[in-house]
Image (cartoon, rainbow, N blue to C red; front, side, top):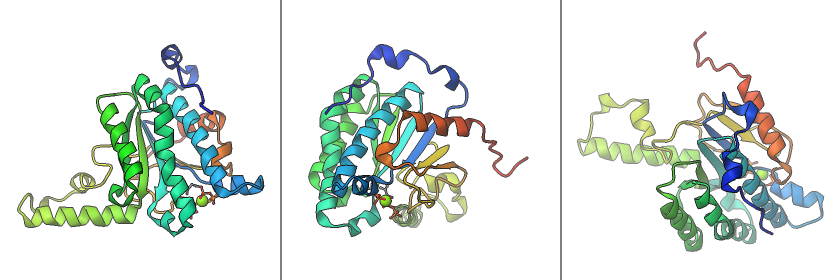
Length: 251
Ligand code: IPE
Ligand code: IPE
Ligand code: MG
């Protein structure tokens, strides 16, 4: 069933108490789909399907709150360890989601991006994402960034390989290497680092997500399973963020 998206009018009404410190970049580890289904006596994949509805709700809220970047951990490099039918089900969801919501995303000025190793994904997943990226490339509203076949260690190793090739080819000197230059080799090149990380599902770990990029991010964990996560908890996380003091090692 399609969840109605924001009309232009709705997306222009400001959220009153969120006009000051909204995190520019929010990254979410959407965890707990399998357990959500299990407690209902349903197959795990039913949880993944329900999780897509949460994605729609949170994207809508992020548009309304004028978040600049929303990175969603959708499939990790470690998730290949799961049974094949579950993997196939998960990797069909991007296409399904985009075939329903791409027009709404376009209408709301959302730009789609992806981070991760796209090569190993099934062609239908890759093509759906690439098509959406192409169709939304000139939008300058929310950047909706899907982490797909994403693993932070893989990303960092890959970046190092490319960087050393460039150094060997004389593009720059090893002495010139700094954090900013290195960041430019990551999938997230040019993106602001996350201000807030949300993980649902009760686990307190990063599961190989954005290890470099989260160096100074604020973390917010909740036991709520992703399919049960709603706008209410999203706003709660933003409220907690608002009251955090970010010192970056200073005073
Ligand atoms: C997160 O939910 C979605 C993916 C990892 C793709 P899980 O499938 O990990 O759900 P749990 O953690 O087993 O409940
Ligand atoms: C992290 O969840 C990956 C995604 C949400 C896509 P997992 O369920 O795969 O992580 P672990 O196994 O609990 O570390
Ligand atoms: Mg999990």
